[in-house]
Each structure stands twice: as structure tokens, then as C-alpha cells.
Amino acid sequence: MNTKAKIWLTIIIFAGITFLGGINIRFIIGNQLLNFDEFSFRTDLLLEEQNLIFRLLSYSSLVIMFAYLVLFISAIMFLINYKVNYHENVWLLMCAILFFLFSPVEFYSSYLDFKFYLLYLQPNPDWKLQLTLFGKRIGFLKGVPWIGLLGYYTIIILAIFKPMRKTKEELEKVEEVNKQYSYDYLMQEDDD
Image (cartoon, rainbow, N blue to C red):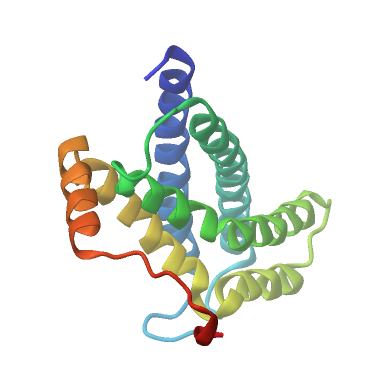
């Protein structure tokens, strides 16, 4: 691994920790607005408490947006700079597919978070509109962001244990077996 790839990998690690930590913090803060075991908002909160929760949600969403943007760019740059045989390192390909598969979901949810943040910055923010945006953010795509979160934790497990990693000798054995048991089919005129 060259120096550029190591630098991008380090950035990926720190941005990933910030991103996943921010998601967990936002989840804990957002639960303060909801009734337990239901998908309904609490009505017993004072306006000051709601404003405090909205401020914390806005700031955590801002951290998550910037961390994901840095993570996305550094993942692309890492894959460009890290020259690897993907037949030997299938786990890395699986990690990249899992990460980039949920990128459109994360970018759209970041758009919703940014709208929420801009709404909070207004002098007298409309708390009903904030609750509507928060509810839209939670119910977005019927849980696909939660599946993405599980995918991100799966990436961590794949990166640690590196399943399906093959050596050059194993790949050569597979090629020998394929050559031994395969045949070349020559097409005849009658086969058309």
C-alpha cells in the first residue's frame, strides 16, 4: 500500500468514526421527541425543551453531513490509489459495494437534514414544520437508512475479519480445476 492510500485510509477511519458516532448520537437525541413503543411525538414537552432538542439535532446532523461527505470523497480516493487485485480481496469489493449502494440514500437524507438545519437558523423557527421534517426524516424510505446503518456496521466486520480472502496459490488452483474440467465448445454450422 502506497503512502497516498494510507493517508486516505486514515481519513476514512476518522471520518467513519465521526459519521457512525454522529448517527448514534442523533438517534439518542431524536428519541427524546418520540413516545416509547410508538411512532408518535410527545406532547408533554415544553417549547424550550423542544428547541433544545431541535438545536442538538441540527448540530449533530451538520456533523454527520460533513463527516459523510469527507468519508465519501476519501473512499473514492482510497479506491483510486490502492492498487489491489479484487479477485484476491473480495472483502474489499464487498465493502465498497455496501458503502456506495447506500450513498444516494445518505445524500437525500443529508438534504432533509440541511433543510432542518436551515429551518432551525431562522429567528423564530416553526416547531410544527420542524416536527414534520423530523417525522419525514425518520420515516424516509420506510427504514432504508436503518438498513444502510446495518450495512455500515457490516463493513466494519468485513474489514476486520476479511472473509473470502484468497491467495495467489488458491486462485491458481481454481484456474487449474477450471481448465481441467472445462472444455472449448466449437460451434458447428448445424448449431445455428
